[in-house]
Length: 317
Image (cartoon, rainbow, N blue to C red; front, side):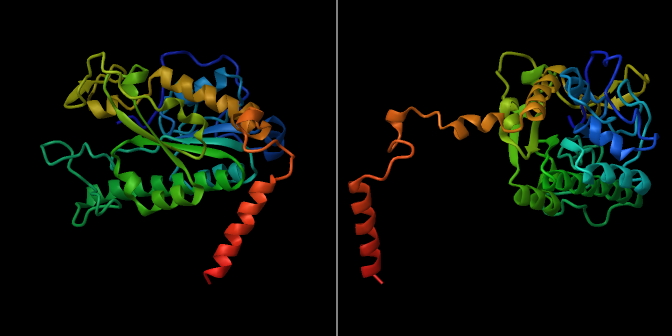
């Protein structure tokens, strides 16, 4: 299910990325001059990074374990040395927006006892079922590390004044974990639900984007019901490798229209983080619609009503 992002467009020939890839040394002082940056973890084809870059917003190298047009060198988030490098950049306040396409392969509700990959989790045991085989428990353990890395990075970015988003299928069991529920509660994050077919995906792909800002709510579009959907069942041949893969894996790449929509909103945050609040700050409500003129004293009636209410409350004690 769509947890990664990608596009059919070529990346820009020049990039404000610094460093060019994560194998290069990180110069925090230099990054302070160039930033702040957009950063994408579990980026897949890194379509969101590409779209953000095309908006003229500086990005850090997208992070994924598989090389692609936008991922120059593979990196493993499980590698503690590399993860410390990411945290050092985040803790320096250099990331204004973090997107995590956290892998959903062990959290997906598409796993059923139907001859395909078996369930590894449940709503009652979202961190892993009991009595799993050694191989399946290793998969669950890896998925839990991805979850913890996601929550740690998002919380750090948020605490330092930035914003984050996390994508997973709408029915992903990741949303049921205590780790994710605590992150959502403590950051007051919003659940933005949408169907990826509304952005050009061949299947419906109901998706949830947990986000710390409501500025990305442009994505909340459901299927218009005017097109055919490919069912995410069975296997297809990967055009890149020629190997058979499950349709759910092939459907992990975001449609370009979705990447572009997110990129425009992220670009607005980069250029003016308070733009969506400006009408409130400016009090643009017509004066005639206000209860009283801005800066004026409360009316005699309002004062008398307030005094009467307080007296009634006091008398009832």
